[in-house]
Length: 129
Image (cartoon, rainbow, N blue to C red; front, top):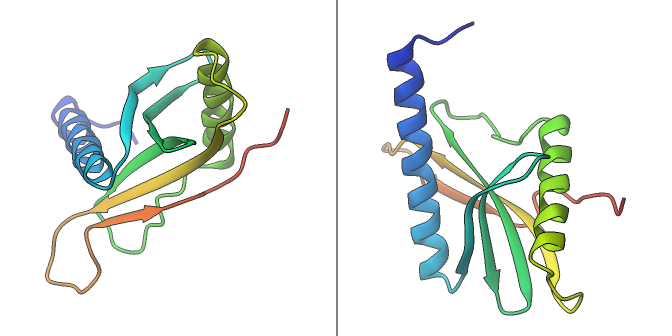
């Protein structure tokens, strides 16, 4: 199903707002931004942050519907892992650092009891290769 330009623009705006909200949340919880929308030939990483001796590669997903887990497909996860390795290589990150991939799901604010922002640490692991 192809989206019309206004739908695509709304989706892009919602995604940018979700990234901004995630970044605000993460900086308030002690994370320091290293890169936003890191582009690699392998793919894009929404946010790259550091907290103490951990580099966090963060995928941000905005979800309209409740119950959508927001987890990227296996193919998307592989691309994010490759982009993360490329970031480490390009920035010459010390092997002293640990790494993880987080997922932040943001949903529409409603009267339900679940919060609109859900931070899933270690959302998935990358193969060593």
